[in-house]
Length: 176
Ligand SMILES: [Zn+2]
Image (cartoon, rainbow, N blue to C red; front, side, top):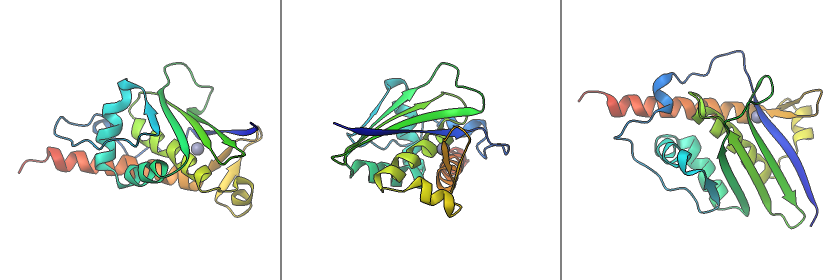
């Protein structure tokens, strides 16, 4: 079966993510939202994913779209060193049949939720059949010299999810 693979990355941005320390360490009072069956996740990450999803409308939208699709998504902890300026990485294979397989590698750091939502948005883009070359011509994406695309909507999704989780945890931990 023929597959076309693309690699998408979260690139180091100049602006610091909105999420401060608390956003990536959900409190024990946070609810959890079960993941769709077609998202496989390292057990070490499951709690953070499910807690993040309970607090973030952006992650909920992504999980719903992925859950309803013919994609299989793996979310893996990345403990090695990514090349300079890269913060996370996703490889997506699209098969002729329409099947999509995505592997998302996210480091466990403070910006985990932002990177996760950013990469999942790239998966959603491919599920929706977004043409990155067309998007680049219309200003919704950029392509670097090595051919790697970055999209405005992935950056926005990452930042939105980080903020949603941060605000959600703040509300949970606020005194009555
Ligand atoms: Zn990206």
